[in-house]
Length: 307
Image 1: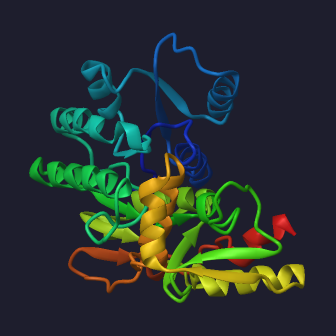
Image 2: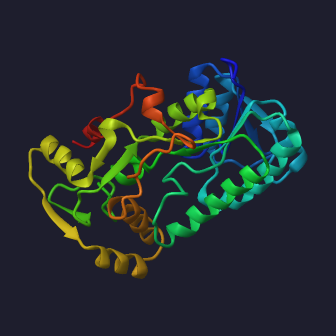
């Protein structure tokens, strides 16, 4: 691919999409977003879109549900990155159809941004979402669309801001509940760093038709290691309460959304070990091996804001 890659971000105002847009702008790529005509955006989103424009982002009028406008937008770019939320996963069939018709896209990133949906042992309600994402992968492949599947694992905003404790927004200072024995490796990353690595992969031919795995050395930690980092910062030893798998499964079953979803996500990584696997060079690439010089936020650094 050329050094300058024209990038279209779908879902540009979401929790991940905004970071991808800014990373693309920072990297100097011509950056495009799709904006619905006369959309009643909340003031915060409107301000964000204005900031994009001031930074040189091209706002294209259109909608995922408007095939003609979607095709028109896609024809102007090299790479399409979808950062739609989990409720819109199945709508990506419309993007696939538009990419197929446009015929010019060099790479498509379907909306994943989590665990590898072809390598997991997750429980419901997470399993259903992963299976929907896996179906989109198969449709992309069947359509012959060039792709990159981005597997970034656990966002610090979901897992680290409260050390995976329910019903609190900050890390605990007295006791901490840990699923399983706390000795299973998990992979953590800030949402901003997801943006950085996504854009790196977008402009790199080595990620073409590969799953792109982000498991950063200083952030590939067991939960016991994470808790120890936090204890060192606050100068206090927490009471560690280990919750056996059968109890976790029961909690998932009796909890309502979003707690059941969060518990199932934690279970997938912390007990089932869905971030622990070997890379297959035929279909996988590891982010850190491709970009060892990228300065990323470590879990240790991330936790400093809560001290």
